[in-house]
Image 1: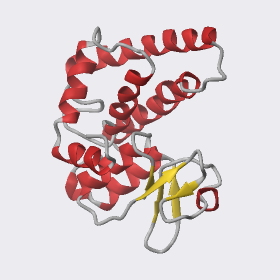
Image 2 (image 1 turned 90 degrees about the vertical axis):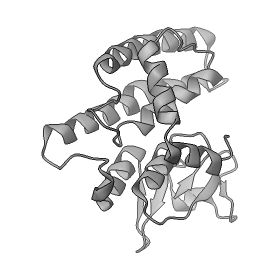
Image 3 (image 1 turned 180 degrees about the vertical axis):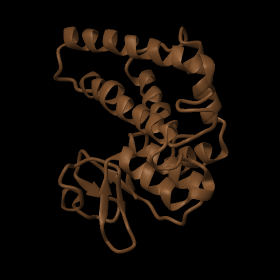
Image 4 (image 1 turned 180 degrees about the horizontal axis):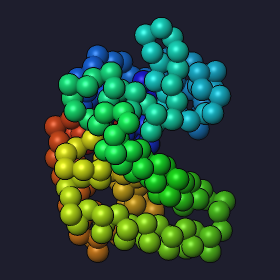
Length: 199
C-alpha cells in the first residue's frame, strides 16, 4: 500500500493492521511526486493521491473508502464489515460517504495557503455543524456504524486528527473526544501510528 503519514491513507493502513493480512507499504511524498523507492508517484496513480493498494496481480485500487471495504471482505474473520446487502453494510457505507464528502474535503481548503481566510472561516463553520451531528450520533454508540468497531471508524478518526493542524478545538464535542480516545487505544491503531512515525 502506498501511503503518506497522517493522510487519509492512514485509515486504510489501520484496516490492514486490523485484518491481519500480510502487506508491504511504501511511503509517498505527494509534493515531490515520488515514492521512497524513487518511483514517480503519478505513474502509479494519475490522481496523485494516496492511498493506493497494489494487489498481488498488479491491479491498483484507489479511494480509501473502497480500499477499506475490499480489505474487510478479504478478511471476513476480522468482523470489520457487515454482510453485503444488509442495512448494517449500508450504514458503514453511509458513514464512509459522509466523511469523504462532508468532513474530508473542507480540510483541503484549510490546508491551502492560497485560500482566503474568509473562505476558511466559512469552512470551519460548516465543519462545526458536521461535528455537532457526529457528536450526537455517537451519543448512543461507541462506534460510527453500530455496536462494534468497523471500517467506518478509522476514516473519521484520521480526519479528526487533522483538527489540531487547522486550529479547531474538539473539546466541546465530548462524544467525539471519547471516540478518538477509544480508537486511539486500539493496539492496531497504535501499531499504525508507530509505522507512520507519528508516535
